[in-house]
Image: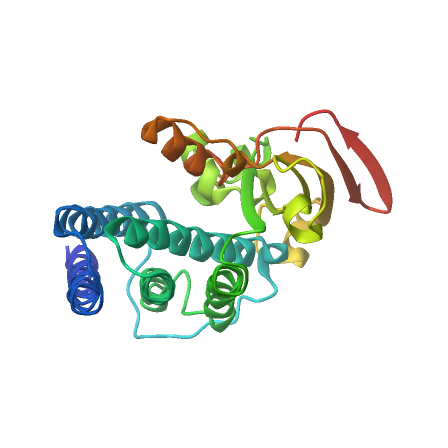
Length: 299
């Protein structure tokens, strides 16, 4: 009961911080630009609800089984072949991506939308570090914060420099049999493995060749470079080796479809394409790992 009360108090503080942040953003936006209140209010309420729901979900999935501790830093830069850092970069980028387009939809100017979406993303991701800091299973990570900042930087630099996104971080996932060996850590069922089993995750950077080279290359056809890792049921390499595994990194390259180049008269379809562009649709890819090159028809 004591542990549960600690988690509830922590969540309340985080939820309050998130709602206050959204409220301040809304007020400043209204003072600076001609913002549509009929769009701003639903966006603020939806963002607050999404924030609260995500924090509760993360608390249940990652932290509820651990006891509380005083605020603690922990150096996990060498764990999981840095797949968790890639996830932090991707998450921070996509949160800003969503926030930016939401704020632009309300009428906020580009520069202010970039600023406030970046702040929102950083605060959201920093909330996860607070959970980590007070959980005996983890600890606040400087490298996590650096990865969050990198994700925000990737979006901010492109939007302010090019006024469009030409390099899209993307995500793909395929289930592995490694999760069965440690389901309490890697997940029990695909819905948990999706976020916990780093062996099945691949993080991509999808390059818009047409925009980057100003050529006649098909706008919808990108080249994606991916990163993954395998044979990990423990965070540290030595523990995996002692368990009879051989952890290794994977590098990929292959074509990718940029769905942002397709447009419809339907706002729903356009929104769906925008959301789907956050993942890499399964396509052929070359893998380089363990000094060998492997062909995948779908990855």
